[in-house]
Length: 454
Ligand code: GLN
Picture 1 (cartoon, rainbow, N blue to C red):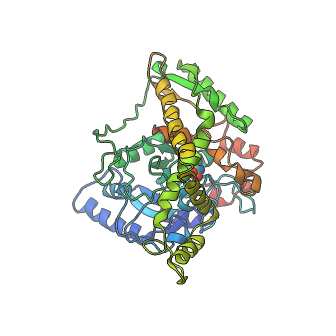
Picture 2: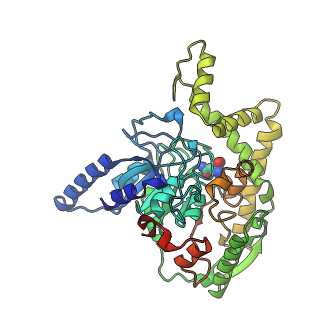
Picture 3: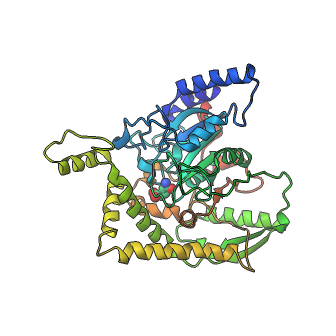
């Protein structure tokens, strides 16, 4: 009830596209009975969750924030959702995203943009939540739920986690089933976790990870649950700082924070060293080509006949396809379909798609080289985003739209290599308090509406 109350209080943030009050109510009745009569408890009892609206939920609309699927009601549950519910979690709503998870801001949704709770005071210009799982990040950061599920193809869980100040985990590819996650790029998609701290995130991961017969790409090995050790000894760790990740457009604040965390770790006797991932400079281009090619093939199913919005155009089948797609998809989706089909033309296939596949292998090998061998490191330390949360007006300006892919500079290589990654919120300095951060943003805590102060 308290979470649903919070959802209503923070409705201006637009984190949810659908509040599933009846699902939550039935769940509460069932778990009360199980708890008091059968005396059985489950690991996620009492844990409220939000699920990004590109995961199928039986009998609950799953729209991908697109006109194309506005009325789509799945007849089955995504494995991730089924596992969470079986473990006792309670769904309070489906969260907002960029249409079909294409974007880094949660600004391109048919339900309107999601707003970052940090610094939000009801003014016309506010900070973006990041994306594409911005609704999930805001749901957690505003206190509407304990954890949320996002998806991560090029950074979509870690980016909004970083901009909203919560933890965001992108698991290893294949560790968590993609069954029921409406695909963006099958070879890179993973369900992601957003939570307020590492312990909660690990608990959720332990409940959703593992082989799934319904997803042939899941890892066959038995899953070893993660245990967070209270007094983990950092002094045996070797952490690499990839020099290529200092890139043009990275804000001073991000660089300072990166340095500050490195110093902090060094003080704890961690061995820090500079490493090189030489193919980083081409990774955005490679990611874009592969993304668009897979998008072109994935989106072909939405033709207005078999799947998706059907318009009344009945002059010819081709006209029907064209009008359903032009009314069903936004510009971002349409241009990726267009570009993807261009890269996949017989005459371009080798020049773009095949070359990008080869480069993707080299990018993955860069990681292999730093994580294996004599000079190996255990972890890499990098920023998640290039800056803190941009103002909405700036983010959607023409120039930034053109630069949008750069938002994923530090995140997408991990998707191409299939390796795990996590974004952890970091304070600017040991002494920085929330009030100081707000004053840096020129915001007084008293100026915030009560709901945001809380
Ligand atoms: N911003 C990236 C894209 O639009 C990442 C999307 C994602 O991870 N879902 O492709």
